[in-house]
Length: 125
Image (tube, rainbow, N blue to C red; front, top):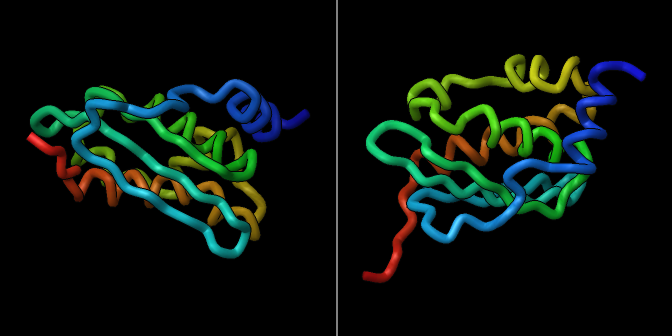
């Protein structure tokens, strides 16, 4: 089994940070209309640092694995550093480049994270 496949299967079967984040102050939703993936990234950002990251998803194994790896990696990271992450960074986390037709599945969590960092969540006082 390749490293890529082993990583995807591990994080799909036992995803990290897959739950709601009740005190999130940033969040965004993303969707891949071609395959039906839907994801929500929730963050608790203090200052310019991501203190906590979680996700929920109705998505394929690759998208869920990517979200699991991503939410693990960005905790404690500055928002500026998180905004600089790209598809090649995700491929390294996954242990290899996803097939070209599946790259959108792998980067959907990353795109959604970027939008979550940019937008605050309105919470009633």
